[in-house]
Image (cartoon, rainbow, N blue to C red; front, side, top):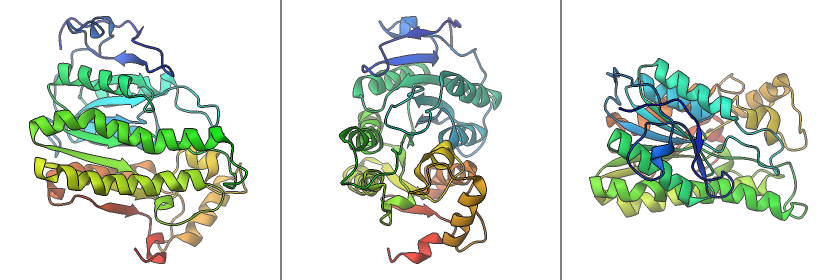
Length: 320
């Protein structure tokens, strides 16, 4: 990576189809000429993903950050994407600029390169711009983990506001489709790729009070299965993960317990333990990251169109 700098530039306007680049190298393209760069880092990864490039949405913290670090430990370079600003209908704060920069720092600490791009998955333009920058700097994108997702305040469908419905659907389902669409032309051209989308156990069962969230997570599984059939003959695998209660802000400050907007960790653990077959409460983000690493690795080369429950046995309670 050459001609690096450490300035920060807005390439568009986040919330208005824009992407702010927190850490990329300059190129000769019209937009990328303004971008800030990570320091020139020698690639030292020698694990299962050595030589791969992975794009992660919702990378600022939680499951996204844990997966970025796990990918880096296995040798992958990272395009870390996050909105890094609040969404008014969400009852908890989104990741911040500082969070996204910290993800970049942690990836680089593993000896891997990282482009950190501030972008809203509800808009195609910034995703395509970030993808183009990663391809320009790293040469390819081999992996997508479409992880960005939100939940709105607890409300029945009859009580839900238009904004609550729209924002959750636009981020969780349309945002996932947008991320797929941003990378698929490149993966199809190369004849290879692995995509994982973050669904939820909320995409396996019905949960009152979060109909918008549940509808999107069921929809993500349908999107995964359909896309897997469309691109399997192009050498591209597509899977979903369906986590249970995970120790993230969405769980601890969000809507994990409908009717209880501010649950304590003890309350969350108690409910999770009742739900799980294993004697565990809420799980750590790394539990999801480890599964995603497996799914995008060569070890999972024959797995596609699947929805993998990371559910501590709670999935034993449903039939499919």
